[in-house]
Image (cartoon, rainbow, N blue to C red):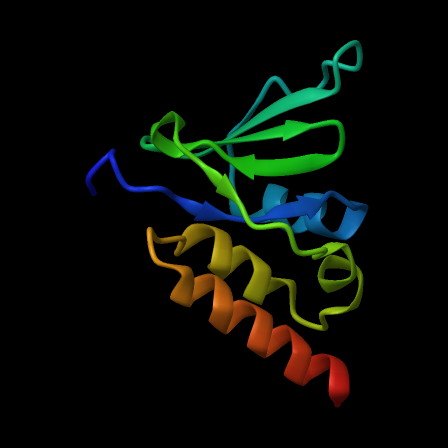
Length: 112
């Protein structure tokens, strides 16, 4: 991936269910307890770190990020299958299409 391209990413509020799901999927979590500045680093793979800052996770891959300003807090709370959120984060791309599909999936589940 060209580091000159923006990474489209989300800001998801952390809750207990999401943290539990992430812990179950990933055996290694770094700096999990730093309550002074509320920053936790989750290591997902060798190329990707997620920084949890004051209860939010932001994709910081390659140090370049674009935060799409949509409120996904309810997606974390209401989505029946947290796997959808995890897959979105893992399969992030430099295209908005993955993010758009995630929103469509969430909205369709919300209506049902």
